[in-house]
Image (tube, rainbow, N blue to C red; front, side):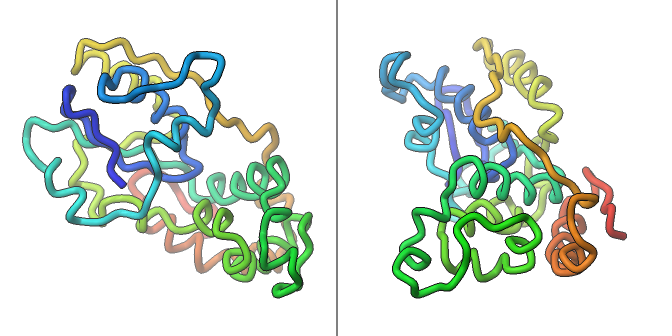
Length: 219
């Protein structure tokens, strides 16, 4: 689902685990069409309730492909994004404990897998948990097929620059605050060679799609 602030003519396609909570929070706070709860009732979940993240659909995007609209996306290193799915959704939030398929025994998988088991069985975990699937699907499913159709694509490390650009363009004050930090990080060196080989096809496709922004460490 494309997030848009009509009054400012700004459109954004969220990518899960790519600073989307931070960006949604910035937009919601200046979007006069939004009715937000009082400050002490706002949580990270608030931003995803007012601006749901859904897969890209051409008919939802077409109204914003006009010259006076600022269309942008934020992307993340594919390896770091995939690892964050594990550290945030599996370890921190324990989402697999909410999987009905695992709880009722329809799927025989541990709820607290180590990273090697999780990534070696990623497809099975996607089938068992819609949350895991949503946060580990390829970037192409959420973004415009041709990134050249955006006015600008930012890396997650450039969210501060995004805030500055939006402020200059709209006259509104955009100030990013880090939302939903995972609190831990893992990388290739933390995974067994067998795990890396299992992830290689998916990550190769992801890095190919984002080759203008990130280098593939597996190449």
